[in-house]
Length: 288
Image (cartoon, rainbow, N blue to C red; front, side, top):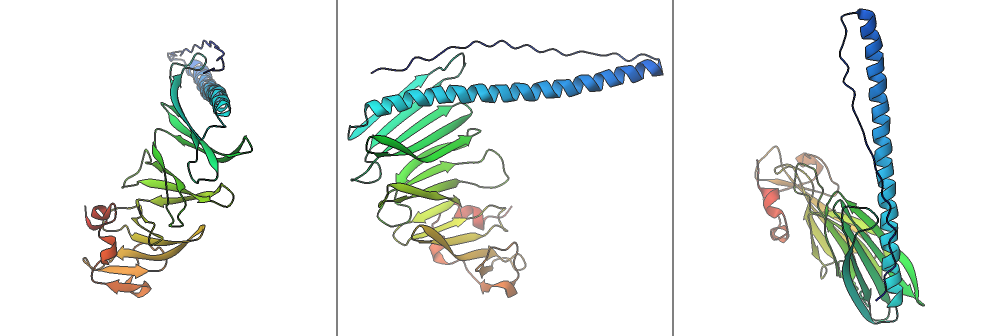
């Protein structure tokens, strides 16, 4: 197997700080304060430039890694199935890039796709292509930063008997439970994918074409939701809110609302059983 050579570039940077001591003279103080402010402003500008330069260099590195991966994929494009995983250290970087290449009939028997995953310590890159006449047509390009990426998977999310592409991630900050899935629906007639649909703490039920889940918020206030797939679109069915004015009862609404009143929906004495087995239901019924 032949790999493209990587070009090594060595960069050296240095920085320093000046420590000013104030004089008893008020005039001198004024001069020193002005100089200090100017130095701080310059330091801030230089720091932003360093960040921009670092981002630019990382972008160049990733482009080189992607170029190698694309070359490997094209060398194996005629195969029914091909998979490889390897590590590389582009240029002078101190971190490894883990690259995975998966090629084959990933979503349907009559069309082939290529999935390239690139993982670095500070993020993950996912690129999905349709293979058509030995050409690679970009379909999904996703960058998941700040180590929020958990996994990606392929299964029928909307119950149309076609496999879809899902990305699972978890935000790096926030007060409450927040398992997130982004769903790219597969169109078997074209081999392409829809825009992504984002769901918080979802439980997929493809047989019903339903998604139930728990929204984002604190126990005792956060609501349950229910959506239904309508082809390549999604319809809102209902929301189940805790009744903050009468503990142990609930309010069903058609629209999401924060702490709705009983007059805004239908009062329920219990949570419908269909929600009892969904992921994060324990979060919904618990109270701090």
